[in-house]
Image (cartoon, rainbow, N blue to C red; front, side, top):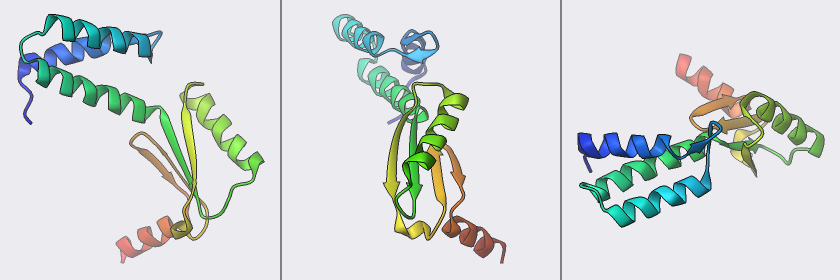
Length: 130
């Protein structure tokens, strides 16, 4: 669905007003949704869909997916989380998964950033160079 220029402009404005101290604030998001529902501006549906997309992308940017071929020992997982939180802020959420397809090593995804130290990732890199 193509979003009109006015709806995109309004959704971005609403998105910017959803932050407190540089972080997305759940209470402000709820308040924005209530205001939009009450006022029903022009292009309401387009505005809300674009606003939802922006919020979803921001939440994904703050969520780390840590994959390992085998279960990580607690010290290693704590070290990885500590490093991520020191670089990207204390409000990072995380999820640790076991993915045998990695063969060995770990893969960390935070939003659209991916750090791949897995054997499978290295094999794919070699395959692409051949």
